[in-house]
Each structure stands twice: as structure tokens, then as C-alpha cells.
Image (cartoon, rainbow, N blue to C red; front, side, top):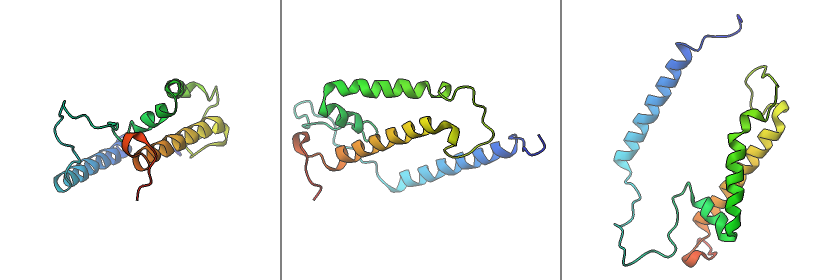
Length: 137
């Protein structure tokens, strides 16, 4: 136990400084860079198709291939909700990036992240009018 450092107050001071730095950076950026808002909603003219927000557009891209692929996203969410129990009774010896005893969890997480990132890029950059593929040029 002598190798360990108590988290209070050292770690929490670091967290507090990081949080406050992030808040002040965001406030500074918010005063300089305007928000990318669209015009007020007009019920007489709906954009075709209306794109989702950037953090949900991967779902819109996923269901554009098939409506049944939404079940894949729901299954992935349930899988991530159960991640803490996947490692079994293995007790962590220390903190490390991508430990060898949790290759399955690490692999599935990295694959899921990569798929979501690719779908987001496709939907944001390569989708044009009427949700057809278009080059960004």
C-alpha cells in the first residue's frame, strides 16, 4: 500500500483544475465563434432530408441502409451496458491501456468506435440532396 498515493486531495485538485480550464476555454470559444444554427423552423418548407445532429447522424446513416439495422445499434447499447461484467473475476493489477486480459472488450469497443466514426464521416461528408451519395467537391 505504500506505493499508492491517496486520491484526495491530489487527484481531485487536478480534476478541478481540468474542469475549470475546460469551462473557461469553452466560454472563450463560445464568445468568439458563432453557433452554427440554421434559420428558424418553417413548417411550410421542410428541408429534404433533414439531417440529424452530428452525434446522431451515424444512426441516420445506418438506418438508410435498412430499417432493421436499428436493432444492431440497440444490441450494441445493451452490450456496452453490460461491459463491466464481461471481464469476469479478473482483478486488475494496475491501470493500463488495452490490457491483455481484456482483449475481447477492447477489440469490440475499438471496432464499434471505428464503425460509428466511419458512418458519421459518410453521412456528414458524402451525403447530398435526397440522401444520395455525392462527392464533397
